[in-house]
Length: 195
Image 1 (cartoon, one colour):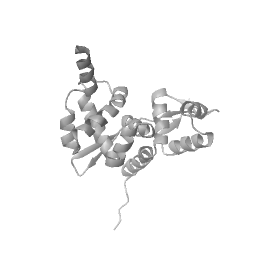
Image 2 (image 1 turned 135 degrees about the vertical axis):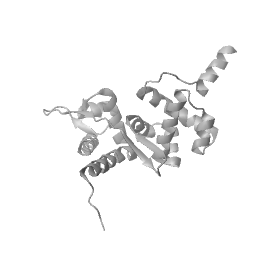
Image 3 (image 1 turned 120 degrees about the horizontal axis):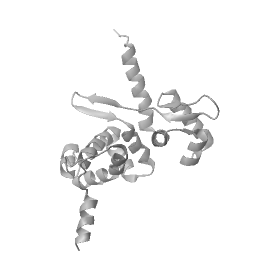
């Protein structure tokens, strides 16, 4: 017997599906991330800033607007668009939480230009990237180390350090961190100064 979902459940499913497109298509994630950082822009400004073909830019903006992650800020031409804040937390198997936020979308957006993030997603999926992003925040706050991250994620220490370093700039762009832990790069720089 089937059940009809409540309107609240329907909204949650709609939100999840609209965000799923962002996480599967780096070009959509790039547009969202650009607008999230810049505040708002016209399609023409997106074309120039992101080097997008005109038809593609309009298609993507329409898709993102239809799914509710972009909103038109004015009704006159040319329309300006802004990113809608995303904050969705999913709990899987009752113990693992995955937070879908603008930071995760920004990490996916870098997939096309960052081989480390691209190969990590290929091996561990977007859910694995979400978990690595959470660990990167903890690492930058000095709450964990790459060894503990490697143990938790079931990956080598080297792979943990590499993904933590790749995600570090994203964490610094999106989060205000009071206590920042040292990275491998910081340790190497300090050792080079002592020479």
